Length: 221
Ligand SMILES: Cc1cc2nc3c(=O)[nH]c(=O)nc-3n(C[C@H](O)[C@H](O)[C@H](O)COP(=O)(O)OP(=O)(O)OC[C@H]3O[C@@H](n4cnc5c(N)ncnc54)[C@H](O)[C@@H]3O)c2cc1C
Image 1 (spheres, rainbow, N blue to C red):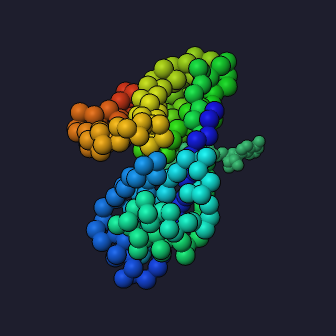
Image 2 (tube, rainbow, N blue to C red):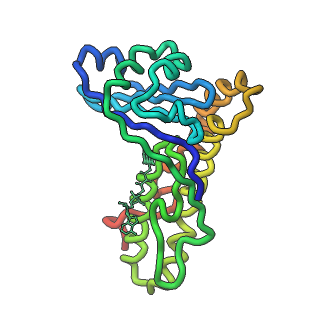
């Protein structure tokens, strides 16, 4: 398990006029500057969700309340937003990466971050946790023994999670370890992630359990 980044989370609910300035359209935007990243996403009519990301070793960027000058220098076009964030209460977390050779043994199975914590770059960790737990209930609902069911469950669902975790780590690599001398190429790579062929692989979890050929409980025999 490794911890690598500080992750600030804000729920911003200022006046609607200010909110309209931050998220004028119902579209998520992500901004990159060196090893920092800011994401802004509208959540309904009167709330926006904002995250800031910086390396864990960067004590200045990771300070709370945030250093307005430092962040504004990195993101000059977001100066207004950063001013607002500096007046808003933030939560701060580190995130972990967990890779387990097996998710089950005998009659014991692990689900969620204990099995596959990943960088929150794709926002899939909680969804995968629920999906894998749901798949487990479906598998156990069928008439096999627990000892038989658990390996079959892991085989069926694991590749979706492993693929998503690899992509989440690649995305994270672009901020955390991408060489400074190649920053000019980074924007092109991030754009390439939107190509349908790549995006379909990266967001394989969006397709849900049908990728694992698991039917919902309602349709199970
Ligand atoms: C900064 C950040 C942003 C994220 N953003 C997203 C996102 O946008 N979308 C998304 O889908 N996922 C996101 N995730 C991932 C998501 O939060 C996790 O994948 C999800 O919470 C995993 O659920 P879990 O139940 O496995 O673990 P947790 O939610 O971590 O729950 C484990 C619980 O066990 C408790 N616990 C631990 N040890 C003990 C003990 N010894 N005794 C009793 N209780 C204990 C903990 O207090 C905790 O309440 C994010 C994660 C982070 C860190």
